[in-house]
Image (cartoon, rainbow, N blue to C red):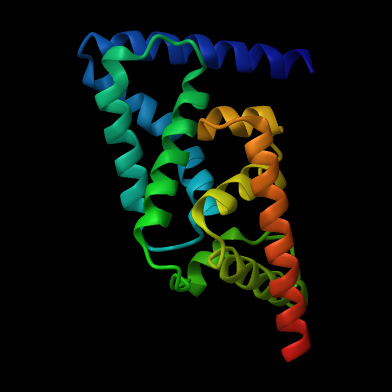
Amino acid sequence: MKGATAVAAAELERDDELVRAAQGGDRRAFTRIFRRHADRVHTHLTRLVGPVPERDDLVQQVFLSFHRALPGFRAEASLATFLHRITVNAAFDHLRGRRRAAAPIEPAEVERLLDPGLDLRQRAEARDDLVRLFRLLDRLAAPKRIAFVLVAIEGLSLAEAAALVDASADTVKQRVRAARRELDVLIRREDRDV
């Protein structure tokens, strides 16, 4: 565990150095920040909005927003936390801006989300489960969906999720409960209709 803590501390230190350099106009430092954090942003976006084709554009949007915010970034939170918050905001805007109709899900994108160690039967079941999950999540309003994903899927505490969505922990708790109730109803309705 000591090794993991040391690596995390070193990464934070390097992030701080890169941020300071980027704030000073060093483009290479910004590029290194992008390379270091783009996969994590992409993963968060996949969880929040699903495996939709717009994710790559949203990743770019997150880093453009970060670039604009860079002069005022005072490192009160870690860079990863700051980027996570920008990612949540971009996801919220994206979800709010689209109709509540189900977003198209690319089969190849779902395949990339699966554990490569699964056998064919397990892959098929996991693929069907993921497609169903994203389809059901598409039926939720953006605030409920984001709160649910942050707490139930990403495993954040209510306080951590609240900080990312700029709401109280109680508000996030209510959104998660409402999302669970809606999902339960949708699942029961689908199961009954099969």
